[in-house]
Image (cartoon, rainbow, N blue to C red):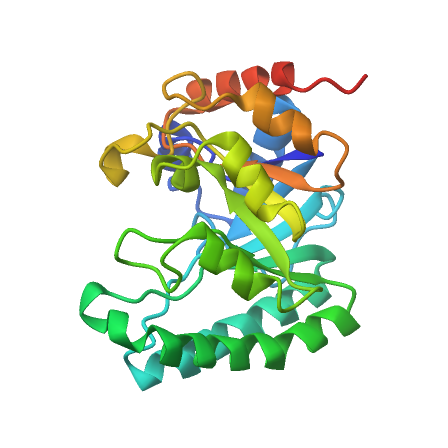
Length: 267
């Protein structure tokens, strides 16, 4: 596996916002990624105020992935159309810029809409069945992040998520270990649950099991309870990315990256 830059740090976000030209902003991203030793970059939408439809050549030297950081509410019909539009733009961007994987947030199902989960899942299925062959024909993987439960997301559990993803052998799985651990799942349980799925990436940050989501996820490595040696070594020889999704300063994120690298045994 390789590590990908995603969050640049609170202090660097302030710095990049002072840069007026796109060239300066891309060079700033390039310097951070190279200095910290990342092999990849994961874009999100938006990406620090930078359009990502026409990337500089030096950015394309990294392994690139694109996370469509939008959570659709299928109780509103207009959201299905918007979700499809976002995926369409993601595919176009990926084709134009040598992006290897595009990942989706699963849609939400608020508590008041739990009785409509089957209906929402059918809508999600139609979306996957529409776009998955198009991504596959371009040699780009389409993946769905493992956000579940919390009386919020479409799938009430990791089991339900795995059952849905397994219907589509070419559909990738992006594991958000922080959220899954915070939901009360242990590492061995998470690995067992997704072992037969097509794993394409990891969102990496520490977590506290059972804590309030805003306080118990996206923590610096070492500030939570995750055994990253156990988790990462299962994937050490997979050709997948690990994108750091940590809310902290750039220094703390850099320290977390070093800790994660130290966890992996490639012998």
